[in-house]
Amino acid sequence: QVQLAESGGGLVQTGGSLRLSCIVSGRTLSNYLIGWFRQTEEPGRVFVARIGWSDGSTFYANSAEGRFTVSKDATKNTVYLQMNDLRPEDTAVYYCAAGEPGAYNFWGQGTQVTVSS
Image (cartoon, rainbow, N blue to C red; front, side):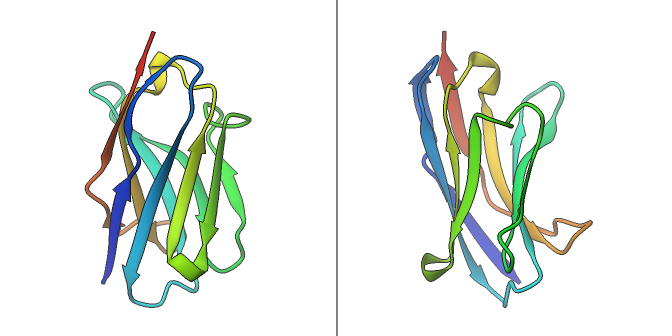
């Protein structure tokens, strides 16, 4: 089992920044991916970014490329999502998730990000 806990959400104005944190605990994560997703009523839950726990490789959705940065601190068992130049359309509940490539089996409870115009 893997447990994940997000924090760092909040209210920010357009153009502002937030850093989300995801503390990961439980089983060994050596071959796991840690992903960030966001959910709104439409289109639902969508992928934002991910990082490989062992090799640190990253991948971003087009909407996040150039504005968001995913990183990890293995000493703190924490994955971060630095979000810059936030826009109202970034408003969502953000989740982190863990799993092997192809399947995110473990999810956090989510953190609300609201970007005001």
